[in-house]
Length: 92
Image (cartoon, rainbow, N blue to C red; front, side, top):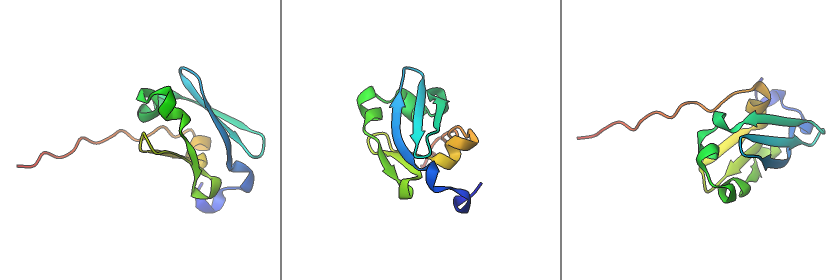
């Protein structure tokens, strides 16, 4: 699925969290629920930081400014966990 495959109903309406899952309500009435363990930045963020989300990408993305995290409804619908972070290269 690529950017051209998204449908208007797949836009974000609301985001909610429990202790171990994130649920995203879409405009078409579906709810996507995924384990927080898939997204370490969200898992380790505070509830206050997780609550500070904003819709981005024309409605097809979610951004958490305090956590430097961005997710797309496309990735959530595919069941795609976050890519592992690479350690920074040592200099010197």
